[in-house]
Length: 76
Image (tube, rainbow, N blue to C red; front, side):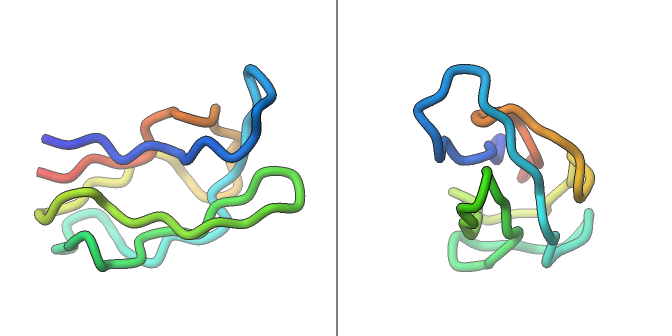
């Protein structure tokens, strides 16, 4: 199992961000080239890709504050 983490986009300790959009659903097959989410911190957006291939399970919900570096999904 591989954790998918919210990217570190700000140097501020304890900074949080939100998942703007999930492009996949739990149970979908993903690869490292699959765009799985768009996240935002302040006014900066970033795309998220998994590091490994497998079946994704979403942990975090859209529009919920998440600490940068926190687990947002898992790939098995």
